[in-house]
Image (cartoon, rainbow, N blue to C red; front, side, top):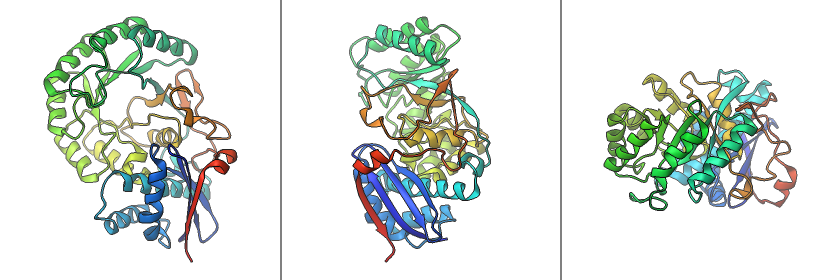
Length: 367
């Protein structure tokens, strides 16, 4: 089974990928969100020339071969592009087998507990508390994540006093039975992170995400070693040796790979297995409602070290207008705080033909 063609349908924010093989089967995947038009260009220029004509069944070899052939261009964009082909091939193989991707990797379809993930920092603690309380009542979420500090903020808060106020405000509003998580998005020095972490511990928070600049693993480890609260991280990391180092040094208590940032399901399974071997749970990053959250749902139902919950963005059209109209039927219904994997073969989702018709189209194929 050889790869015959690779097609992309993209906007600036979303890029879907269709891969066809010489036997006629097709599968759908996605390059990473954000600058998806650039990732699609990288796919056609630096991934497709090596992938076309390759064996479509050995995905580990496919991912490694492209990495080796493009060794002068390591990093995020190459991974974001590879992931489009990889996730499309998983869909193709699962459809041929008449199974969901989840089943193909050893899991079983079903539901996964979700936490409502807030992306907002430009919201007052009182307004955030009211919003989360409303969503708790409407969808049954029993876990949420909020933002503290400023994104890559060099120790600054979004505005003075916001972090000190929002930590107790959210706990008081949601009550003691709700799990609350906090994400600093690489804001703090170790000493600052430890101070904020103590506040989180005092109010019973569940984990503290990316407290220090994510590339400074030793700083993150210092925080993780000092605090009782679980420290999590890894969403930005896309190189397997970095992941190996992170796990071996136990820089974090919870690993959070992003399937699209890391380069697809095949490479994410490698990272999840590293975590399993080290007894570290895996709670992937998936902070929007393109296909990445669906990929993550399938993964969580299949790996033995799956974390406690699925990240589920609570931001709608006002924050992510590009999320609208992607699918014929959304796979993201939350019932009693849980999301359910579709029961159709493959990823179990149909991309909206009207969206595809409006997207920028490109194809690479065998002559």
